[in-house]
Amino acid sequence: MSATVSGSNFTNQALVYLGGVRATVTRANTGKKKDTLIVTIPTGPTGARVDVVVTTSEGSGILRNGFQYAPQANKCGT
Image (cartoon, rainbow, N blue to C red; front, side):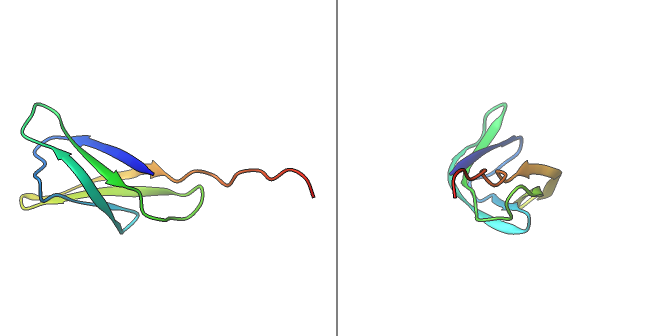
């Protein structure tokens, strides 16, 4: 699964963390009015809301509770 992180002043060397776990940046579109990073979502706690942190050479930005892992699916049957 992947997610898109949008913002400004990203670099190709940006690091992204979801709930303190590093996400793999698979694509970076930078140098535009609105930068985006496509990341592979690391495994996390079912249903939890976690902070998103983007770190570049210029510093870090944080979005508190900016990502929610999918809740557990209901199981039917026996």
